[in-house]
Structures are given as C-alpha cells and as structure tokens.
Length: 602
Ligand code: ATP
Ligand code: MG
Image (cartoon, rainbow, N blue to C red; front, side, top):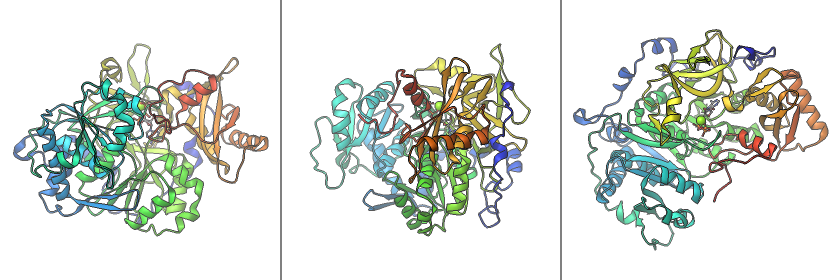
C-alpha cells in the first residue's frame, strides 16, 4: 500500500478546519471530552444506560425504544410526528406507540407467527411501517424493511432468501408488485394490507386487512424473554458494489444505536430529530426508528420524497434541532443555491449530520454558508449496524474527513500481508484498508446464506470493511474509496473521492463520478462523469476548463484524462453513486444486479 502515497496535494491539506464557536451546542455536547469518554468507555457500562426487560428477562430493541418510555415520565412526549405527502399530520406519543406496536405484536400471535419468523415490510414511510417494525421486534420476529420502490423481482428475491412468512404492505403496492409474484412465494403465508384513507376497501384474495386484523387487537402485550443475541433485523446492503447481501443483526445492537445517537448525533432529551432516510436502507431503521426513540426524543417522519423547498419547510415548521441526511440530498440542495435556504427560519437547527457516501468538502462548507453550521460526516455500513466514525458536535471539522472513531470502537488502517494476515499501519496519512476491532454490539452476526463471505470479513481481531482510508496525525479518518473502485494508473493508486471532490469545486459541476478505464499504456486512466449545475451546458470549452481545474488541483497524474457530461449519475435508492454501473456502461459489460438502482422500478 505504501506506493500509494503519491506526490500530490492531499485533500486533507486543501481546506481549512472549521472551528466550533461557542453557542453552537459545543458546551452542552454529549461528547464534550472525547478523549476522556473514549478512555473510560466500555460496552458493558453503556448497556446500563438501557433498562433491559423487566425482571432481568434480557434485552429487546422495542422495549428500549418504546415501552420503557411509555412506562415512565416521557409517556406523553411525542415519539413520532408523521407528516404525510399532502401535509397531513399524525402524532403518536410514546404511550400511543406502545399501544400500536402491542396491537401488531398481538396480531402476529393471533396468526400463529412464531419467534424467529421473518416479517417483511414493504411500504412508504407510513406510520404502520413503524408499528410493524417495532411490533415485530416485540413478538421476537426477524424484521426486514424493504424500499417501497422495489419492483416485483427484487421483492421476490429478498422474500425468498429471507424466508418471509409475513408481509405488511399497502393495497396499491400489493396489487402492483406482489400479486404478480405471489405464486412464487409459497412460504409467504400472511399478507397484511394497510388501506390508505379514501382507498376502496375490497381486499384482494388471500390478504388480511390491517384495519380488521391489527386495529381490533388488545393494546397490551408482554414482550417475551429476549436473549440479546436473538436475531432482530435483516438488512440488505445497498448493492453499490454488487448483488446486495443480507446482513443479520441481533437485539444487542440497540446498545450501539442508543449510544451512537447520544455521541454521534448528539441527541438531547428535548430534541426534535429528523432522519431523512427510508427504513428500506439501514440508516432509516437504526436512526430513523430505533436510536431517536431509545433516546426519548421526538422523531419527525416525512412521507414525501426529496424536494428542497418541502424539506426546508419541514425543518422550519417542525423546529427540527438535529438533522441527519445524505450527500446526494445535500448536493441537490447545493445545486439550488443558498438564497432559497435564506427564505426559511431555520434557527432551531443545532446539529447537521450526513452519511452514506463520502461528503465532499464543498458540501461541508456549503452547510456552513447555508445553515450557519457545517454538515458532520459520519461513516458506517449495513454490516456495522450503527455509526462507527463521526465528526462530533464539540470537535473541529476538517472538511472531507469522516471524523474519529466512536467511543467503544477501535479503528485502524491495515495492510493485508501475503500470508493472509493483516497488520495495522501506524504512520499517518498512509492509505490502507479500514478495519474495526470486532465485538461492538451492532456488528452483523452473519450474511444470510453466505457464511464463507461472512467469515472472510474477519482476520484475527479485525473486521475488514472493504473501504480504503487514511488516518491523519490528529486521529481523523479520510475516506479514499472502496477497494473495488480504486484506480491504478501509471503506478499511482487513485481514490475516486479526491478526484470527485476536486471536480465539484468547479462552479459548473453539480456531481461527479469517477472510474478507472482500462488503458494499454497506463493500466487504467481516470475517467469522470459529471452533471452540471443549472445555467451551464456541456461544451468542449467547458470540458477543457474543468480538466484544467482538475489538473491544477490534483496534478496531471491524478486528474481525469476524460470527462463525459451526463444529465444525472446512476445511483442506488440509498443515494450512492454506482460507479460499477458507470464502468460497465462505459466498457459495454453486463450491468449486473440493478435491483437497487434508483428509478429502475419494476
Ligand atoms: P454493497 O455492500 O451492497 O456494495 P453499500 O456498501 O453501498 O452496498 P451500505 O452498507 O449501505 O451498502 O453502505 C456502506 C458503504 O457506504 C461504506 O462501506 C462506504 O463505502 C460508504 N459510506 C458510508 N458512509 C460513508 C462516508 N461517510 N464516507 C465515505 N463512504 C461512506
Ligand atoms: Mg458494502
């Protein structure tokens, strides 16, 4: 890996740090003294922040998220504030949420659904999705939320490999997407349909109506004893690098969800928190459902898809204090400019965070301009179950860095040796694979039906992430690229992220995706696909200008040799640029699994 440290300006040196002025919540930050909390942190001690099931009967995610607050002083605090597509609102206190989730758990019991059975939820962000996930966890089922935009094939594949016995969906989604494949799914015994207000209520054959099955059940339910190692959630990865994998998580994961909510998202009891992710992606479950509830805050759930003005309206009207979103959305907001943001009163916002793919320095800085505070990037994976590396509220932000490991997380940059062992690289700013010392509670417990692949993720004490990164002398981590995406060009190893970030600095560039294109001389050359900001159109002179900018920033060896203009880049439903698809299309190769490609429905 050593060869990699090319003589070029490092992203880490290009942007000034953003210091945190007093008054931005730094003094009251949960992780004010990172070093001290990190030194004293143990997962056993963190577990004590949660209650556990009454009578010492184990640990259940839904108890920590819902019941313990419903039984205490926060019972009447708003747990979920749901905003429908049409602006309508439904409000649920912790007490309400306990009743609704209990009803669903009782409904599962009445159907004879057993502990360990798999329940899938295929729905937009409607309240019943949240009841089903949490109620399913109460009944000790394995719950798997799916993107409602999936077409029939991806739904059938996931239900089959996950052995789904129950599916909760809406009548419209059922008719369009599940009816055509129902015959292929003999294991799917029960389909529960949520009717939308105003929809005709003639359930298709072989389905059950939520209204009659769930709403009529008792609001009381006692969660059975739950071993922290009992399976709880099945989450499919985003499919950015290949066919999605099914990562298995257990109830113990709630300890990570809870403390990362405190430490990385800086949740305080009075916060109004908004995670924009869909629960079909792990972020929308770990942080769109579980972490805000275990922390007892009010969680905003917006049904509508991204629209900048709708989002600013929600931030203003709901007085959101902590906002967790993703780079794609931020880049779309940037495209529309800061002037629109200024029309809204967003003075409630205290902390802004981002996850999912690298957050370009430009985007961090734009947050500062538009909202008066930077976006705090954090890094994790479906496999890690929760945030592992983050920019914390009380810490200076170095734009382009993912931040530092959470308390309880030991991270390292490692190199793989020829004998298969791995060794940490101690020198700063040397690229290698990002590894985490195994053993935190939300670590996946397996890839469904892919034992060999799962085992290969671990070498000695380390979980190997498949991402390449560097650590600087201050302990900040810098994402370089996924191992699969790294480009080898004339002896240089080039991470797409730094090239994309440099391209994004050009005022014409809204978004960039960079790949390695095979070349007989160089091995690979760097090729970029860029989409343009409003007011710019593709031309030869613009291409030359962007190339010139990249050369100046990165040096000729690292700058792209080719730039194609593209009206939009292919991305996953969780918002990640699919470089493998850019590459396959460029080379005329098979496109591979496209189940998670945005806009590819049915
Ligand atoms: P697949 O594993 O199916 O290819 P995926 O890796 O995109 O898909 P996720 O688990 O949703 O599926 O995403 C985790 C990956 O996203 C990380 O391994 C990393 O590559 C990328 N990622 C997430 N957050 C960040 C971040 N803050 N900076 C850089 N990369 C990030
Ligand atoms: Mg992955």
